[in-house]
Structures are given as structure tokens and as C-alpha cells.
Image 1 (cartoon, protein in one colour):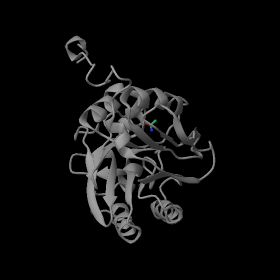
Image 2: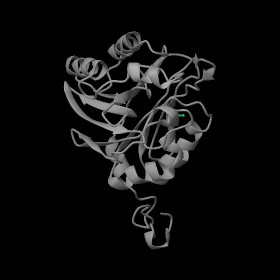
Image 3: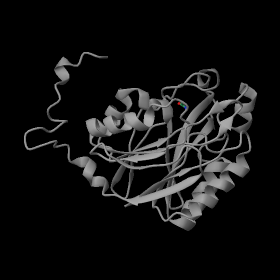
Image 4: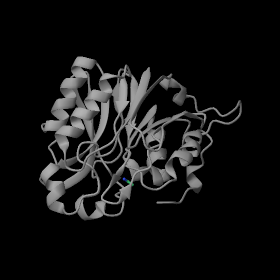
Length: 259
Ligand code: ACM
């Protein structure tokens, strides 16, 4: 399966320009599955709730999901992308998945980072998997990675590939992903943005990491990049570390009093 990411520049509040840019970049990719950054269409460093409200959209009826759904039909791709979601309850930092012209589903970021807490409600849908042609995608958004429970839950549910739209500002995620992938024997595709927005700098370094904990590819810190690679997603289903250790069967939940 050809999978990839788009690492891109994003202009705050310029939804049409950002969607156009993402589509232009994806047109150059032959990946079947592409992950875009968190809030890829709106930017991240909002000044107030009015700004976020003005660029939030319904999923799947809104402009961004509709455009990517159409693009996914022409290009026969599956696309995972982050956007601000408008609902009757309030706003969520969400992602949507579209595949070959169809809306597949969404996820709402559970672990909100810093100022996000002023604008968004914490995700209320829980973690879930989406099946695309027999491959199980496990979506999470940026800071969710910091909580081992997120990646563990998705992996225990049976995810083959964790799809991770991000707007990373701290330096830790790309290196930490090696351990997370090793401990769960799972693929992760992290798509980050680049550039600086109202004084906030994003670290780039989008990355695809394999179930052996090795980095398959890490992007630059500051350039727009598309990357694609052929992987066998079913490698994530082999939880045997060696002939005697299966990392899931060897768990001892009776001693994990963490809830
Ligand atoms: C983040 O969760 N965007 C840092």
C-alpha cells in the first residue's frame, strides 16, 4: 500500500488558499493514503473564539470536506485531514477521513494543547478505527501522542496505521515516535506543518515510523514536502517480538491500576 503525507505551509484564516495548496501538492503524489496536518485549512494560532468560529465547518457538509471528497474521487485516494468542526454543542479540533469520493468518518481531538482549551471542546467520540479496503486506520491528532493511552488504545483495538495530523511546536514527537511504534508494533504517519504563525514556530519533520521503531522517512524542518512509500500495513499485526514474547499477549492488565 502506498502511503504518504503532505507537509505544508499554511496561511492563517485563508481556507481556500490552504485547500488549493493541499490539493496541488496531493496531485503530485501517487499515494493511496495521504495524511495532511492538523487544522490544515485554517491555521492554528487563533486570537479569539470569533476567528475560530468564522473558519469552522460542518463535517461532512462543509466546504473543505466536500472539496477533498471530490478530489478523493478523481484521484482514488484516501485522505485524512484536520479541520475545525462546528457543531450545536460547540467547536471541536477534528479530523475527517474521505476515500474515493466517500465520507468515511471523523475523530475529535481528545487531548487539547494549551490555547486550544480556550476555543475547542475536548473530543467526545472516543478513539475508533476506520477500515479502508481491509486496512485499519487509527486516527489521533497532534498532542494526543503525548498520552501513551491514545496510541496504546488504538493499537490494542487493532490499528494497522495510526494517522496523525499535527501542528507540532515542541521538539519531542519525532524521536518519541520511535519508542511508541516499537512498544505497539504499529505504523504511524505524522503530518506536520511548517512555518511561523503570529510568533509560534512549527517544527516540520513530518515522519513515517515503522512497527520495528525505525524511521522510514523524516521530512525537513522548514520545506513543503510530499512523501510516499510502499508499506505492508499487515506488519503491524505481528506482535511477536521474538519466539517467546508477544507484546500484547504478554501484557498483565491485572497489575495495571492506572485508571
Ligand atoms: C498540538 O497539539 N497542536 C501541539
